[in-house]
Image (cartoon, rainbow, N blue to C red):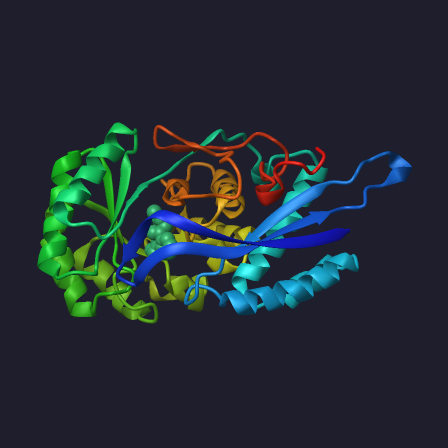
Length: 358
Ligand SMILES: O=C(O)CCC(=O)c1ccccc1C(=O)O
Ligand SMILES: [Mg+2]
């Protein structure tokens, strides 16, 4: 096989401000692997693409990711995919690029859409997605929510935790009022609250009928999350906690009703899917989202969600946040759903979309 990579740097059209900081651009590395084909049985070469878009704190740094991928490329060019995966162990974004490029290659070779190759037996044409609203003030958040409603979204996620509890309560109430009772409303505090603050906030928000609150308190505090679930009765989704805690630990503490799975932070679609299936078996609902990835990883995440039939609304309507992307979106959002590509593999070549002779 032959492997090559290319770097990218994509600005967001509107920065996403969260309690953990503002995301203004996404830099990363795209990876392309081409198999040699088998002349004996007349199969041509196939191509697989992958993406590493590191987001420090969630993943390794861009510098570490580059180093890992440099080693992995060497192994891939030596026909050693297992060695390539071993070279990026412990570096989630780099491992995401390698494992998803190999998955795309294998799915393409077996002429299946990626979600089927990942293990889905049925057919899935669409995945429900949530609209994502950042740390806008009450008026702007309500306006964004109204717009999302007209676009067909039935689930909305609002960032909280960056302001006073009073202001956040006002913001969430404004959004609830703007969309009415039939929209599922989620909030994401990105770990900003302390135990007491979280309890206070969720008590004040009890009238807003939250679908769930995502990572209300610190990543490490599984016991606090478990207590918050029991005391408030509000569903808790863990996101950041998954970077440092296995699902086993989370389940033992009874700390979550839902898990927010970011393949880029978890080291690949294979690892995220394993966690999703373990969670489902225990009655914990998985949700797939990204770290505002570019088109290759975002579409991979759409396939992961499609491979989990009946999945809840996922945080995959983020393509529009990028001012530029690596290629046209093969999984556009229509009426609050991501359309699942039907072609073999992931359904995009990313930066190699044009002019690679196919
Ligand atoms: O889940 C979504 O709706 C969009 C993704 C999102 O919120 C996000 C994007 C980048 C980094 C962290 C997060 C997060 O869920 O906390
Ligand atoms: Mg989150």
